[in-house]
Image 1 (cartoon, chains in turn brown, blue):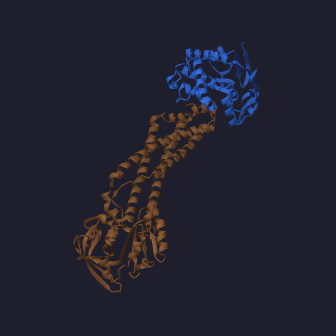
Image 2 (cartoon, helix red, strand yellow):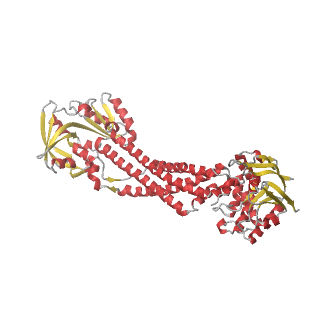
Image 3 (cartoon, chains in turn brown, purple):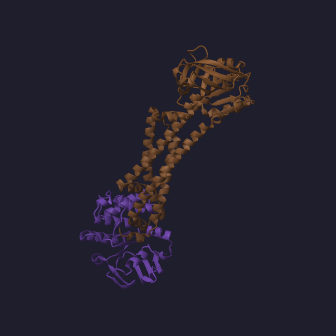
Length: 406
Length: 228
């Protein structure tokens, strides 16, 4: 009956309770939706980072990463990438030649990373080919085709089928240059990636730098799921102990931090909202207790134990908080479900976002764990907020409480 | 048989530099089935005396025995339990929990005592019938008149099967008809259930109904008239 009494007591003053419930609902709606929004945003960045840019695992010569020296190559890189394909959990492996170079157009030039790929194998480890916005992915141009980013194209002031010149140091230490024709322009929404990378055919680049067939500076490995990351890394490392094997978390640790920081930020945000709401809840419950001093005095006089009175006030507070919390969480979940399909268009901020590597169209993501944590935080807020008013309720001696003029 | 035995009861307040003897040596016994009124002007010690008898306050000196238990020696937490199981209360106002129905208010005490659901439902209905509220079991206090609310309070006070019922100015907020109804019911229950009723009152109608009238002044009993 304590549950029934507590629940009904909340509705003794429906306007007052309604106001605080609405405040909590709005706060929790904001908390849930921010959490799902940020999660979606971070997930998108992570997905693009892994699926488009770095893949799940990368294999290099152990000294390659020091200064990208073209001599630090994997001699039989192509053959090793074939063998890696046979590991369980691996669904793609692609050998790459990776070099630092200069690229120039008629108007200007800039430093870039030039990546020589086998197009069909590259498609198994990177979905960059799906981001081609103009032209194609090594199909139309037969001689020295190049795929560049939209941002780089703008920088060089070139367009589809334009010619650009790549200047590079070859295996013999000579500076050499090659002309390439743009067959495709990609738009990933990540300006940094688009500006810093251009893709040519493996064979064209190998010829330009006069290196042996079969070498690779980098082998990218694609997996069927994130859960296989550590195991596959260990297997590759065990099979090829002289090579450096890294997961995406090691290649671009900032991608992993982003996800963790994103989660932490949104929980802190939710806690701050609840802290602010907590004061409102305390204020409301104090009013409730002060209005009911005589009634509480009567309850203690007839034999209701102080602990039960304390529990009743606490339960009222928790139920009040939970009612608002549940409404807010449901609203947040509903909006997330709607926007997870349609997305949220932030294109008015596109330039700034894409400069930092973030897409301008966000799809919020709902995780059950997130909703459970927020629900627990709501309950905890109710419990903590109830302590002061509940203690206040016990302060009065029953005989004195019954005689207070109200 | 004595239900309540009071020996040399004293209560001293030390609120300021002056000590106030609110109750200054009271010796009284109450037997089973008594229908007694405690009267006295403001400042007579009536409230303080009844608070101690009801286990709501502890004496400075003296003894209160209820059913063989030294109430004066019980700790605060023990007093709460003692009141729950031994004393029924009817207050002047704020008797009932506004969000519960009449039946639920009567059941509430029994639930605190741990009475099984079926038993307490049955007893609640029986008691409400005895106080003339059959058919109003599912009404909340706001839907009942003042007199009806006090009748529910009486039913609740009896629900716990107390050794005695303490009624503090139960008729203060009632009109004459309601007062008469209430007193008749309480008298009837007193005779049927043989439960001691002790009233604190300024109401002459209550005094007229009582079979024993105890008058207090300056913390002492100045008269104790038994009309049996």
